Length: 172
Length: 172
DNA sequence: CTGACTGCTTTTATTTTGCAAGCAGTTGGA
DNA sequence: TCCAACTGCTTGCAAAATAAAAGCAGTCAG
Image (cartoon, rainbow over the protein chains, first blue to last red):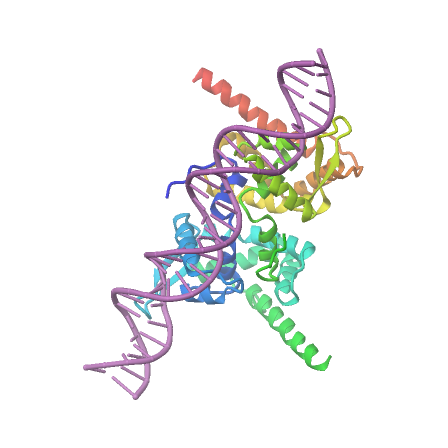
């Protein structure tokens, strides 16, 4: 319950909140996978998180003010998890991690495409995406732009890689 | 020894390498604390890492190609740990984490000042600092600039806060 | 030749994690 | 009205990671 913090160093404090193997993946799924319910987060995670860990991390992230939880009007037992502003601002960390991983680790094609686009897009794209997240998770209206949103572009690029791979597998 | 990776997602892969509570702190000390020997890393860590964990993480980081180790000519048992290019390029992740922690967590004055300067300096300052790290850790000569280096400026700012705090404590 | 120092290893206890099952409610369809 | 499927989570237990303390063989300066 209580956390005897190891030091007042900002990097250390950040690690104490999200420096485990699951928290940032949950946040990733909230951000990029648009999973908002417990079962979605549980089943949708490619890495296969277990239910007790997920429940525990959601509690921790809630307590840390990184996510929030509201009741789903469509079902009395369902909860909708949302990112808070504080949670949305984790995006640059995730983006940098994705970029580094893309550059140095054996990333799969399908899962790497988003990282590549985010790297190429840079901070300007990140901040546009954060505005989209503010609209989705916080209900903050944003100034509409021409063309597809960053979220849509990332999704479309992912779909295309998956489709291409499938086509390649059948012809080759 | 072998790591059955959970997924080919770049964020997940990055977390599998440096996503524990200690690895990034060791890298932080290598980067900002200029600690290069085992004992320095062991004793200098404000968080108090234990020796077995440190030994284990150094092994892991070595295997991952994030740091390298050379013998110290001055002492047959001493080793000098250095960041590789791959390790140096973790700086933006650390900088973003520091910035986020500085903004949202109860960071101490002394330890927060570097985070603030890195945030204010932005990517341009980070890349200048990375060049300095390349010189220190990789022996790559860099183009000299006028005035103190980023490393020196961070260090000076830290010292100043410590000194001010001490003075404040005695007068107040 | 001795006492302090070097990078680690070993041992043991505690905490965290992972897996499988289960549970009290809710909901929609028959 | 009843039941099967689904809701978010909890429980029990084994395995793994972590933490604290002590120790160890070699090195080096005086």
